Image (cartoon, rainbow, N blue to C red; front, side, top):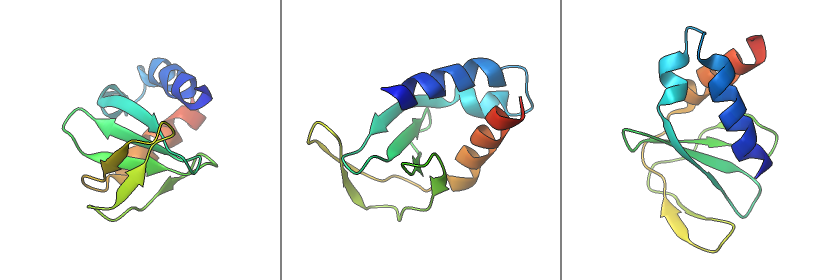
Amino acid sequence: MFKKLLVAAASGMIASSAFALDSIDIAQSIALKDGSTVHVFRDGKMAMENSYGRPVRMDPGTVMETKDGKKITMQGDEVARLDNILAAQWHN
């Protein structure tokens, strides 16, 4: 829940930055069982954030388990896209 609030707050702060279009593209953030978070962009591609808040690489097609026990499959690997969003959050 905290990470969802953090992403929402980051979206508001980033609105005036150069990366505003990227942050608006995050459609959903899903908490995983291991403490990491998967961010789903509006185009369906995904990016993974570890439990420390850092973007990490995840192979497309990898099956992950959400906190509520559902299985989702990684689509794409938008590490650089998420890194830009997180970096802009810390610079504002």
